[in-house]
Amino acid sequence: MFKATGKKNALIIADHSFFCTTMQPEQALDLIRHPAITVDFPTNWADLGSGSGLFSHALASLLVPGSKIFAIDKNTGIFERHQKTNEVIIETMEADFITESLKIHDLDGILMANSLHFVAGKIDFISKLSSYFAKQECFLIVEYDMDMSNPWVPFPISFHSLQKLFQDLDYHFIQKIDELPSRYNRSNIYSALVKR
Image 1: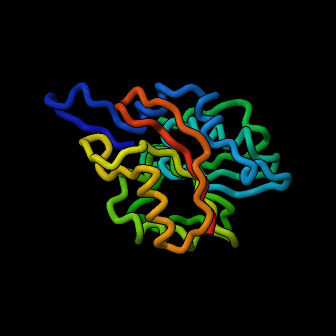
Image 2: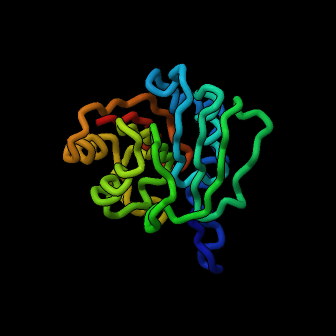
């Protein structure tokens, strides 16, 4: 999603791409599996910062046929199409989900896998996303469990900080789903479901 350039930074890999290429599809699936997602009727989701589509496809495997996922990224050219999507429509959309107003509405959920840490003003950002939902707001978050920033994770958000962020915005259901060790740093990767 973001890439450093230049000789000095030649070995720096885009954070989202690193995250997706080192994680296996089964791990991605385990991180986001939750009863609130695996409902028995079609739902509409957006994957903000979809990258290669690792989590878009994991989410598609949990949704029923007829559901739809908007896979949104600044560079949709790296999105990998799979033959099997569980009869779920995945529509790619090229946009900067942080700064642009997105042409999406009536969502049942928003997935942000390793993308929220690129957002500086998280309170205003989450408030903006609220307008994209149909009724009840549901966020599915995957992030590094740390608060110390670095060049690859400029605005990190630990699970503790995530809880505070959403509690301050009057969200009352904030549940950690799973976590696993990160190859990127010493912090774990966690997943969480947030509903108002």
